[in-house]
Length: 318
Image (cartoon, rainbow, N blue to C red; front, side):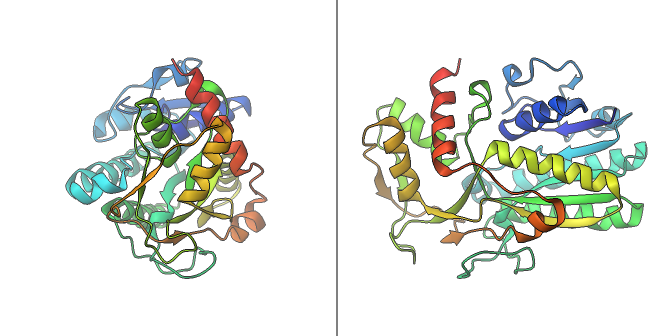
């Protein structure tokens, strides 16, 4: 039975992957400092290393005896990365270097990396493919792109097999106890504002889009988790170095997402427009032809599924 180390495995996305891997017969080891991860998400697991990704010795220890790695541990708030880029380079790039060093020491040669659509240059294209220009607008995106390059370069020198998955916007919950607790993602951010009696904020309505708000590609977290299992199988089957978009291939504006939230909760959110946020692209929609062709993966769940499952998780959280 293959053993997989998931860095950031107690986080929102990482926990979904951990549960789905365990359900698929993998042994799972989790590395997380629990700065954002939640213990309740990983109660079923016993092989947990409560350490920071910047602690190289601890990461070396956590990597011993595993067959492969899924690397998610990172800071991920676009706005914060603009305000404090040093924190993001230190954590995201430094953490990746620590992990790669640990893999080298322990002879681990398979890795799936959590990257982001924020690596892409602004584009007027209907959908962005993996071959389109990369020009991150934020330090967050820059750290992910640099981490991709490190994995590719070091992996090729070491004879590793690697896949980087460029996520688009992740929403929903596979079960109520695995909901998104991020303060920065749109849907939970709207829910939190409503709970606090505030009006949710839309960052700018003067973008070159149909309703003036940013357009994003949203994917259900369960679909995203399944893409990691497909990627893990691929890096285990043969030596490859690949990059794939993971999204739904459909674009929704911020207003359209808020409209779906209002339908789900059955009332108006009273959303208000505020100043644009630094580092945001007007439109990001994925072309997912490559991952569908190569790995046989495709998304199944809709925006309605995403919002409704997120709302159930929000209302049942401890």
